[in-house]
Image 1 (spheres, rainbow, N blue to C red):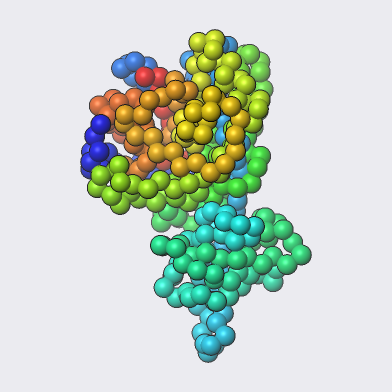
Image 2 (tube, rainbow, N blue to C red):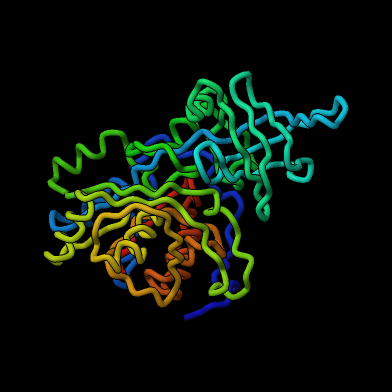
Length: 350
């Protein structure tokens, strides 16, 4: 196994970073890799590679509009009320959340942040580069306030180039979104239309849903030179009885379980699921899939292209091999594939 982080680096032209999705979702490019063979296809061709014996697994998490703007109030200060940008990252307990704040250095314990007449938060503590806040939404549910005033939490590489748009409330939410909890989208599913499930039923392609609430940790860089020293962020995951049954049935019958997105793969290859005989579970997982991982569930992966040196790119290396992953990305870049959350995708069968 290659443990040096620099081995998972690659160069990409900045203009390939997709800032918006294409109008026709199923016309996005899809680079297919099957046993050392590559071919350029479109998302609309996906079901040509899936049979009635296989199982497509989707993530049904729903993204919270959790990027907020507020003003800091401090009882001991004068009239200075600096503006603060807050992005919810991970729920700790009830309305207590770990958040990313800018500028973090202007906050201290006990500060109050006012976001609207209905929503405020008190700074509780600091944990590394995050600020723990206790949100007060009065008589309203927190999610109600977020939907009223929050922006969608687009990735930093998009926000650096453009501001939020109303269209992101549709574009950055998957058609399978059901349960609020994510602060980043499971982007593989952004390629599908609202009636995609109908097409699966028409072709008798089995499918099911799991839940992984994606945390902002998915965008945090690996800071350890040796990837084995990286501490993976934890996320809430759930596999219900129906999904677990379908997965066990598919594996027993020799079919392929195809993860739609790295979020699904992290759940299905987690020790919580594998070591418990592929049974239903819910809880916090911190699955870091890297080269040397023994894949027990997933034999296919549909996913976007991911940032260099990220845990997601390392996952791709683990799944198809480092040499093949390097070739896959070189080919995609040479073909001018659009990259990252709003970009093109690949279908992998090692």
